[in-house]
Image (cartoon, rainbow, N blue to C red; front, side, top):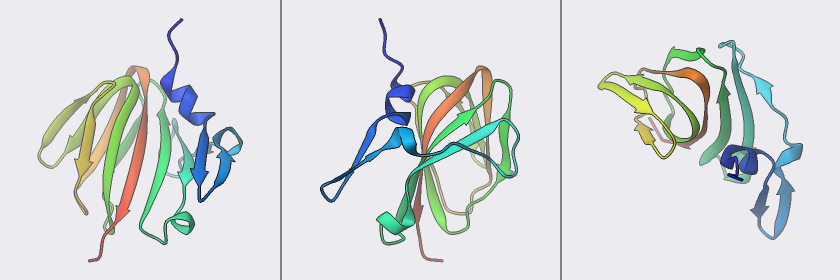
Amino acid sequence: MEKDLFHEFETGMLAESGEQVDLGLCPWNEHKDFAGVSLKTIVTTAQTADLFTCHLVRIKPNHKIGMHTHPNSIEVHEVIKGSGTCLTEKGEVHYAPGVMTIIPRDEQHEVSAGEEGLCLFAKFITVSA
């Protein structure tokens, strides 16, 4: 039986300075601006001295995170499950498991899920203006 890697991470464990955090206890939250998008914060700025955050992202089939920017961070996507596209100012990237994308600070982008939905890690690295 094939393991669902995304499920392994959403119910997995985070080790932090000798402590273990059960990621299964971290809540999923609906995105405040984009319907059909859920986020699970697994690493917070409090844990990283405001340097970065990490989130699991689920996008329902045929939904999207609309065009937006992050003025204070570089965003990294790691596609774990499903398919879709990421549209940036420089073009379109087909999303499938194993694809990674780096989105520079303040670059317009949107992420659309395909027929089976899309699951990814999103990491935000804080940068100075």
